[in-house]
Amino acid sequence: MHCSRAPGLKKHGWGEAFPFSLPNSGGLRGSVGIYFPDRRLFRALEKQLVFRHYRIDAVLEGEIMSKSILVLNGPNLNLLGTRQPDIYGSKTMVDLQAECVEKGEALGYRIDFRQSNSEGTLVDWIHEARNRYAGIVLNAGAYTHTSIALMDAIESVGVPVIEVHISNIHQREDFRHVSYVSKTAMGMICGFGFYGYSMALDALVNHLRH
Ligand code: DHK
Image (cartoon, rainbow, N blue to C red; front, side, top):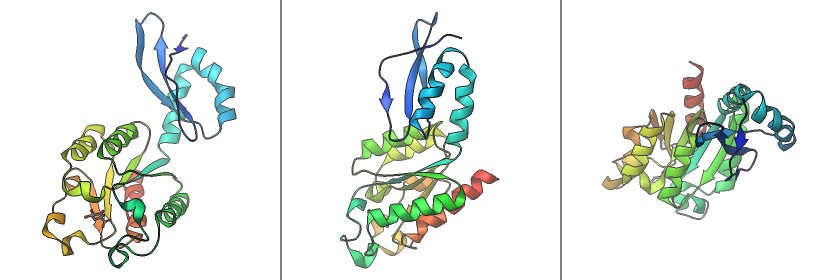
């Protein structure tokens, strides 16, 4: 099958995703994300994938996707270490990322760790997880308690999500007792500090293996 690459190539940190335009289909039919851990491997295989073995891409993507987990952090979590250390501890977001990556490696998963203060960006990242990540660990910060958009995004993509909070939200102000994320997440872990992320990764991988 002949396919030509459409304009709009989108570059990612460790691979590439690109939409395909299929001949005789009237233009762009859909976006096919293919991730390669190694750019040279991508270059070497690109021609074959695009011009001859169109089916191989799905296999490669599936294999890599099934071994990748997205860890998403919401507003103000970039201030970890300085923000209310009595509640959130004195370790930083960089420390948290290192712990998650190490835990992921121990479980045999690549961790893509991100933080944003923007609700829309978090929605976009949840959408991105569809067909690209095996699951999501999500600390939506304060959006947990307000965001119908995040709840809808989780429900829309059909990717397993484990909700995590550093603090025990049920021991804090009443407005923190409500979680829209919990309405669609598989489960929720809170009150265990950074260790909650490791617990969430364990829970997610346990789910994926069964
Ligand atoms: C983090 C936040 O930023 C708060 O808005 C949540 C959560 C709790 C946490 O404990 O990780 O209420």
